[in-house]
Length: 295
Image (tube, rainbow, N blue to C red):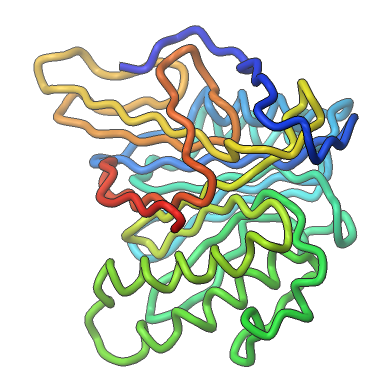
């Protein structure tokens, strides 16, 4: 079960190169659960990284799946000071799949159109995407070009999302049934490999059924170095014999429950596991279904 003591983990340098003192990055958080759950204190902890005096004060957003659709909430201002964030902590929709993002603007104006997660329809369902990092020159990479989708804002992250949908589109439009998970994973791993040479490329992508997460590198605040890990994962299960799981992090009914959380940094003292550099994990109904490491 998730432990109640929440803190920000201290990360130690692994590679002294690529120093970038004083820098910071966006924060990512995702939830996958077998039964509907609510993001409570995990959202609060993530939002605390985006207060007015932090470097991630340029916007926040969350997408809560309800079937094939999403309830999306976004604001182009500091999450730590947001009454809407506080309302979501108390009244947010229960969901089996959610993605959240706290923004530090590196490219593009501070505006609603540049606030993640981004959401688009494909194959009769909503797809959502959130990216942590900086991808300079992405618009010039032929392997990441697109025609069918257009960015609403002007960030490298939304460009990446449009490029991903362009590559997934043939799978989702060839028939009434969803494409095989392995087919989706193949596209996503190739997409992630095209992003990594540009810069830190941590991302969360969901298609209403599956959560895909790619861990790469991030700027670690204690060192200012750009290095792995870029994402951490926590998977836990509770049985019907246990009391209702109402702890900092998630609140769920007293039944057989599986929960997996992914975040840029560990949000608790529980046993968060780092994703390997370039690793893609596949999560559905709270369980990790596959892990693909870069070759």
